[in-house]
Image 1 (tube, one colour):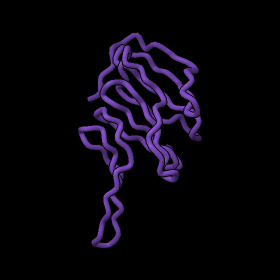
Image 2 (cartoon, rainbow, N blue to C red; image 1 turned 90 degrees about the vertical axis):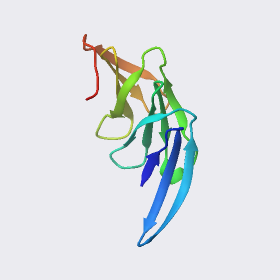
Image 3 (tube, rainbow, N blue to C red; image 1 turned 30 degrees about the vertical axis):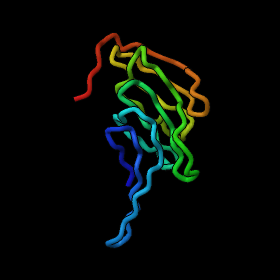
Image 4 (tube, one colour; image 1 turned 180 degrees about the vertical axis):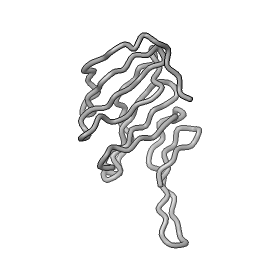
Length: 120
């Protein structure tokens, strides 16, 4: 079980029978608004309130790596484009949908919905 705390810490709870172990996986120092696993569960996207997206690879137990930092146009949400784990899609408050490479954060494409977006 992965979850985040208000302070921007990603936790992992390993639960087996009636026992559990808590591990701190990453501390990104920004409140995390959402966690999204890739279809094969090899990559976890961490989206912050400030519009930054990080990747975390549970199998590598490394730290979270900053993929995107778009403070000028704050993300509401991000997700993986399936099939595969090569691309992610994001949407901003202004209604811009963007496609990014997960390998290096390269911006690939965008379309403007021409409406303001909000999450309900």
